[in-house]
Length: 426
Image 1 (spheres, rainbow, N blue to C red):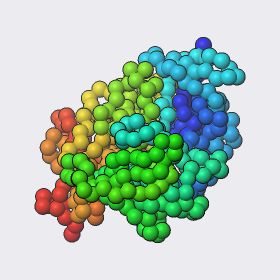
Image 2 (image 1 turned 120 degrees about the vertical axis):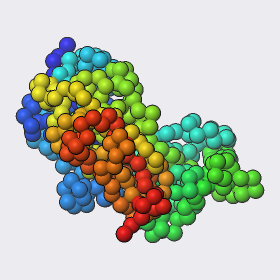
Image 3 (image 1 turned 120 degrees about the horizontal axis):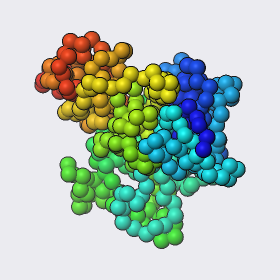
């Protein structure tokens, strides 16, 4: 068994940023374990631009953004192993991994950073009736086929779900000569960023059918068409509203699931709202010395925020491994109030040394609303928004002074304030 000060599980944007931050803070004993053949994670196949505006002050493609961190990792000489699958993490921070070249390895870590990212929800989770014919892909799989392997999934495409990957693939398939017949969304609002709706759908006259879903697929060997129906307020298909689209490809963009199987093995407590770990302001999980960041913690909208969060996890993991991380004593629980879904972190110290970014997604579309932060019911902050949508993450800073002013507070609540409650713009 090898002893390592910090083991980082995952070599995507979160793992790379955490490693760079820990190295720049003085750590010289760390290791990145990545299951794919190269570092970079999902960014390797995201060839569109729009990355890096917050981190680097310029627009980059996904591979360019990843390359900035990979170049630092290699320049610093940070050790990493690709083609290495982590198969277990114990509560004592023993990491077990397997690879073709090294066989079975065990690492006793001073601290572990979980940065495994997320995966797409597949067709099997949707319950769509019909044959198991070819031509049905998750949007991310189609993106990999097109951008990395040069393979075209099909020529007539329907996309189910309006997540960002689905919206981007609508534009990408159009660029490659396919006909995108429409993007079908179950909810009455899109789950993607507004800029992607404009740049990927509106600019190419691709219809967005809100409050619709796929109720049947046709074809035995190969997909030949899909039936789309409108849904009511209870999300049930409305008889008589069916439309048939003749297509050979159905792309699924119906949500992302944090890869937390390893987290569960380590005994990390998970959140029902985010499917990620429950963490404090230092991004430490319920298991001491194990930290979580990036899309394995909660699904982000921008990779820049992933890097920012991961850098904080890298510093906290180093401080823990060195015995310098303040041990939590008096903590407050952070709860999601009306309209706020999955606030992270879920607990905070009462004696904060610096502001903490509270992050969440709204549960619906709320125009001219506000977000309020309360301590045991007493409002300490309110910020107005022109519109809140589930596709865009909300970030609000919690200041140490607020906790100091309410030393007996046990609960922080983040909630949406509607216009009729005084949340309107002024």
